[in-house]
Length: 339
Image (cartoon, rainbow, N blue to C red; front, side):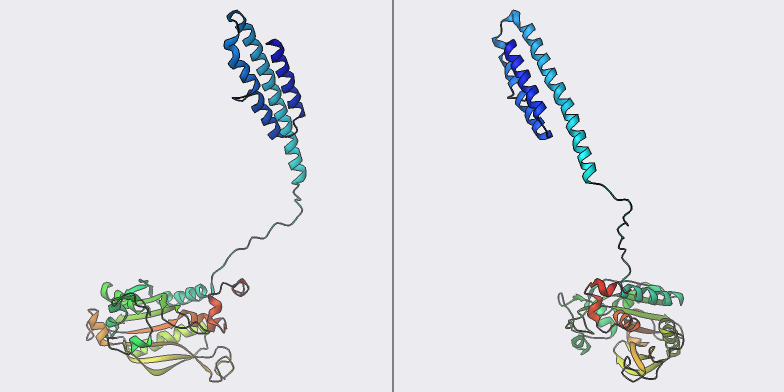
């Protein structure tokens, strides 16, 4: 038995010395000390040794095991140190090289335009109010004086979920909900995403954004509306900007108008940007229809108000002279980096 243990020890030592990788060293450990290893096999055969010889044989087995484990541990440390030194030589860091520049994102053109509009109206005492994008037909149409048979329903190409629920075509429903729940007087703007079944082109998209505003108080007149929008235009496009009101028709306002501003490129002289007219259309507005007030529980004999709506994308396109609305949604980094 002594000769057998000596042979196992010498064989193990030889294989450990020849191991030049940690994986090979582990193979040696398994071959000699594992469950089916050579030294383990000797331990299992101790039952065949004479009782009086077992203490001496057991001591030899333990000495052999300790010697193998000690050499395995020592060789493991040497291989780990050698491996680390090799990695350090291979993975040299040149501290004189310039660092990689972090690419920091920034606000989208729509967000920049929206924040500027909100700043202007909040400065005039308005509140920013939001509402659901999935809306009831009542709030999107009926409460705005657009009954079931009204042609405006067809003109807006609505996405219906069922006969009573739809994707809102405008943010006007937020105005109705505000009239129903907020105390008077009201001064608010309602920005948000809206949806219409439009073909995608340079000026249309099935999903876009609107900013609608509303004021309700005693003795509100069309003069208040004109003054508000004139101040808004000057703040947004420049102090020399003038506004022009053209008669129009909207079911929820009476009288109604579309608003033009003097071209901020040519100052109203006429250029390619304004197609020679000197004016650029920006929004629609009007005095809130008495029927709309009454449907929301407000007495039109005591209170009056005005409302207006502008497309957020239209403001961004005009302000930053972008000629194609699709650029705002294509996520082209070359375009967005300009802002």
